Image 1 (spheres, rainbow, N blue to C red):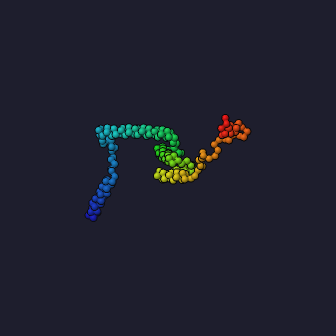
Image 2 (cartoon, rainbow, N blue to C red):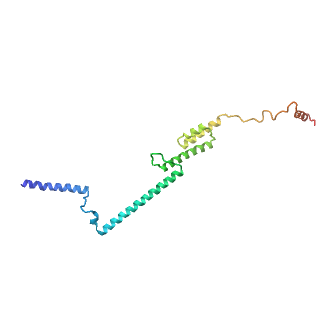
Image 3 (cartoon, helix red, strand yellow):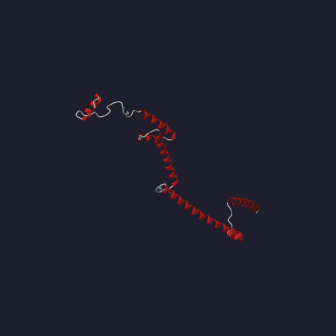
Length: 183
């Protein structure tokens, strides 16, 4: 019997260590509800916390609905319609549209500065990656356009000045008289 008694006390400390490990890892659940062990002051504080949480959730829901209203208004103002199956991130879509408009504006500004009006050259400018590349390309396209001969300007010193008078007209007779000095 002494052997059995010796093994039992050694088994208990192991069991106590295992229980201590469980206690540290998991909090023990009390058998009584928390509100019964709190007392009157604790119950009032707990109820006040619960009420504050309900109020905060109401405010959060109100802010969420107000935010959704702003998103919808912004979407409508910029003509952004969400694609089917998407939530419709209006801000992202508006930012993309703004970036595209700024890029197109830069292309047209450079085209106007360098007198580029050929649609193919404009498409080539749009395909440039950044603004410095667009600027260099616009300068090259403008230099190419200036060096290409176009239609020559008319020379006013060459050719006839006016329509000659017809042979059977009074205008011919007056032209001869004026050249000969006859009045």
